[in-house]
Length: 323
Image 1: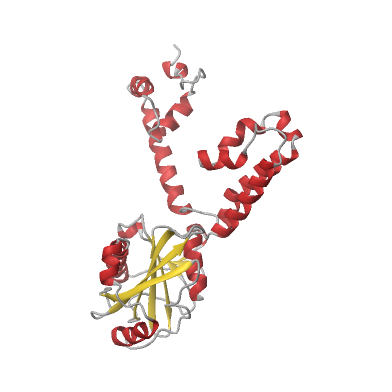
Image 2: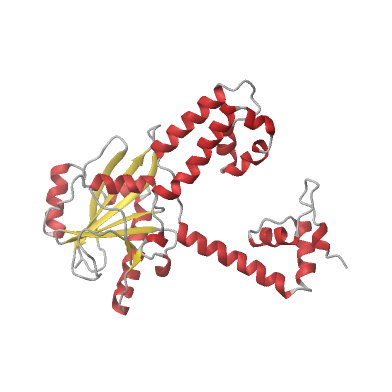
């Protein structure tokens, strides 16, 4: 007897295969009719349940490893100019790769056009499409991935400290995204005041260049006192805003500074990516490094080109190890 899933229709006239329906179920992308047919199938097949669970676990694992790769803003802007140039010089408006990529969020939108013989006869069109593909492909090279980092073994005490630390800095970072909270907590803004503030809370002035300086694409918002675990009651919290081409804030980045009391096995000159998922903060990214007797924690919701810009501004190496 033919399984009724083989007759499942996607709404466009084409039948969805068993495997496709199971993948769609794993992604929670089924219509009501497809869910009914899937339920009938699963009532007769234990294998279907296992395949759906496998797909979900696979996506979760890939998500943890790959993070959220994003092409740097400057590269993206340059490639989009190439795309727009190709589009504007086309003899017909049938293929517009820039709009296709922006509106659908991926290269899948180009599939139908690229199967057409006329597409490959139009050099301007496929050059624009190639540029669009590069925006996505190059990102995985420019942004480090967790799989390339060397893991560092931690003791039970160090893992406990890591969890308390990540929970604290992630919470404080989310708080200061609110302008009202930032205005109150991060009230130290003038360079001279910031230097005096550092001497007061951590006992010295950080030797990291540019820690309290801004650029046209990176704004120093302010600094304030914080209570990072292991800081004996005093540490500094700084906020930077990554500024987009239109002057808007694209991303908020926090940097916490405290005296290095050896709670974590940090090597000087090495930047570490912390395992925030193991600390219950999978939606946050935390980088850590030590310098001159102080330890620094950089916190953001994703490690992308904006965070790379902060690291480069501070003269800090990209992560090579994980904690």
